[in-house]
Length: 240
Length: 387
Ligand SMILES: Nc1ncnc2c1ncn2[C@@H]1O[C@H](COP(=O)(O)OP(=O)(O)OP(=O)(O)O)[C@@H](O)[C@H]1O
Ligand SMILES: [Mg+2]
Image (cartoon, rainbow over all chains, first blue to last red; front, side, top):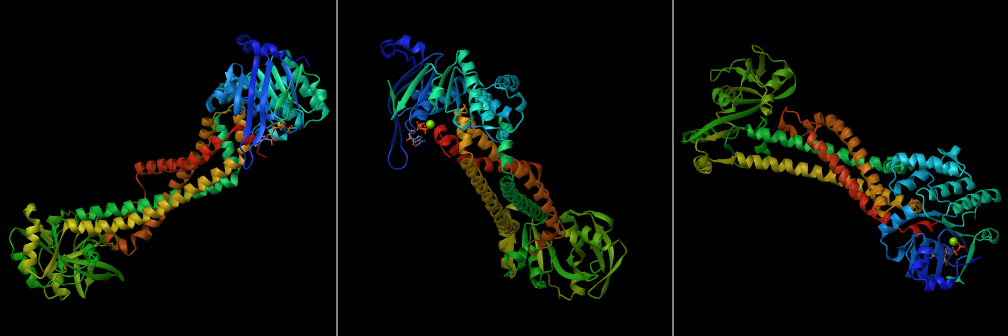
């Protein structure tokens, strides 16, 4: 729970941007659904240190996923600023965001979100193709990645023939396809049994040790306790 | 992993829908090919026929409609309606050459055969016929026949054969080379012999007139109608009226085909929209791991275009086959009767095939634009949060 001193971020100016891989300032997100607008985020301020392992916790529906989507460039804030890896998410075009997601961010979802019709290897290769990797690069790197998550044997299996734990490991391999500096995970173990859960967490520990920045949403305080820092999201805000 | 693989997977992901959509576009293209080849074949035939008319003016009895005038091209039996005095009056006129025709009918082995009385030498020269065998009948009242290539062929007529027309025995004196026109299906006999055997009292059916001075065609027409109680139609008018009939027919055919293709296009739109909806989540996943809008758009467009390519190719093959089967039927129908024994070319030229295939791809791709745009426009979050 060693959160970075807030003062540094506010007074640090340009140096702060360098040590913080992510900076969120007064970010709001309002969903203009049918009927009443939903204020999912109401002024989030957050700094994430380069190479840190952070867990986002908080009650359901309070904006954890929404915040993670902003950090991953899946969506833009309604107001305020979100700066990730030096890029201003709120100012980027759709095409710029797509390139940003492809090259610099790895995203893992609670429900795996693999493409069911494709094989394990194809799921990983598809992500590489979005970053413009050649077919040969795709093949060799996919084998490497699947080995690192212990799924070499399932290379040519259909994604929908796997167990939940296996699917989530494929999803992690896919998130790492383009060797991103930042890995964002939205309740990656929410649907896993405890054995699969510890497998996945073991992989994440390894990735953290490699120096990647990890931000993970979780409901489990037990899991959160493994992180360097816990950030609580409550009612669309980050509690200091 | 490349787009091609992805497109194939997506298309085959729902095989029955793929097949159904394909049937739609295939039917559309098939009907287009059939309609176009029949329409184009008819038109080409008419053009040739009219070009071979070999006359600037056609003199017909008063009151003939366009349909009867058009029949002049075929050798079909027409009433003998221009009396000898009128013909004589016209032949008095200077600066024109008159080729009278008396179209009558007969039958060989119970099959109707058109028989036409002509002035042999003049007509042979003006139509630039050449003989396959035998010679052109010489005497004016000779009971001799000059047979068109197609009739000679279908009834096995050879020089020296005898046949009975209206109770009189005629001998085949010559057989013509095929000219590719309605003339191929006609038995020609000397005009005087025809008038005598068929007892027309010197009357003829119509006359083709060649005008010496091509700038004075209208004047010649005027002088003919002044001299005799007849109507005159110019080759250009005749051609125009034939073409207008053909054009109406082939325009109708084209509209039918266009409707079929359009219906198929809506089938593609519908299928693609359904796919967009069903694959919402998949699209969101692809986007959240870095796919650009452009790439999503491209994949959907490629899927739509595939319908055009595959449906177009199958449609071309089936359409060509169907045209071949239909040609003999079409060649016997009432409207095309005047095309005579000439065949309608059932296979559209290669350039047309390429055009049709290109058109199919363009239509299918256009049909994909809206669904592809809808798919590309989805934001990753809204697509993913959709359950
Ligand atoms: N695409 C959307 N359209 C409209 N409202 C949305 C959308 N996504 C989220 N919301 C709303 O925004 C609020 C925050 O949602 P969010 O998913 O960020 O919560 P969460 O903290 O991740 O919850 P959980 O722990 O259940 O995953 C909720 O009220 C939710 O209903
Ligand atoms: Mg959530």
